[in-house]
Image 1 (cartoon, rainbow, N blue to C red):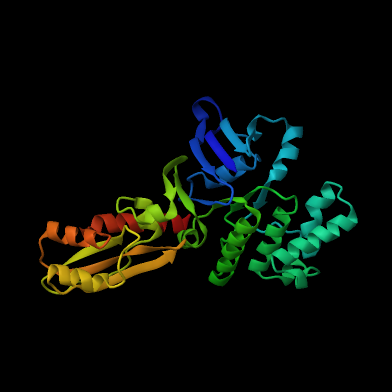
Image 2 (cartoon, one colour):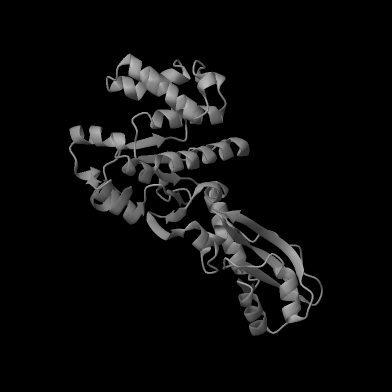
Length: 343
């Protein structure tokens, strides 16, 4: 597992000092994928560099499997850094080396025998589904395939932690889905702790168990993904699963936002809510899906003028929260989502 304890990074000194990260505290358990999202300038890149100790934290700790890496000497750190494999946004492959030769680099650096290197490279390329392309050069591979080579190389030294720094950025949706599926498979097979840094909110939904939002160097909200999506007060949950663009409610109707907050929401909740309130319910928009085995999402509905307390109570009996559609809150959620996408 990996744990960050009051991690702080400051660049410069005195009046010119700039605090990029401030007192970050979170842990990623073995077998967990923990996503960090945030707008441009939030500190995501610096976080990645501090986690793999390419940048030394100004204060605080990076602890991997109980060992505080931030207190090690340079010589000790070179050894300990093998416990963290890193997959970068740009695949970082050497253009004049084949896929197999790129994967072999960390092993050759450590002086692993040619026979053992060949066996390990073949094993890794098979694991990421690229055995038939072992002799291909990077320019002969698709973006998704190059990232698979990068993942194989990151696993060469059998790390316990995998750091994914914007690894799906710039990939098409199909390639992104294949990479996130591969990361989840590796997590399950190898018990990895995966720190997944990204600005792509939709990708978080595909891959994460937990998520935190980084803003101006601070973790402003974090939690289990499903819990955030079911929390009507969570701005991060709303940004991850925005209400969407609803068609206008009809004449004499009020618009309401409905959110799943329970494991026992009936599939016919629209009909059940209509019967409970004895009024027709218009479904204006919906974004509902199963994530990590749990049904989550929200919907916008149109209701004739009904008693507000009665409507909220009727929705609660169905495992839902209901609130009058607040343009300000929805726009805030969309603004947050847009800031992540633009990062």
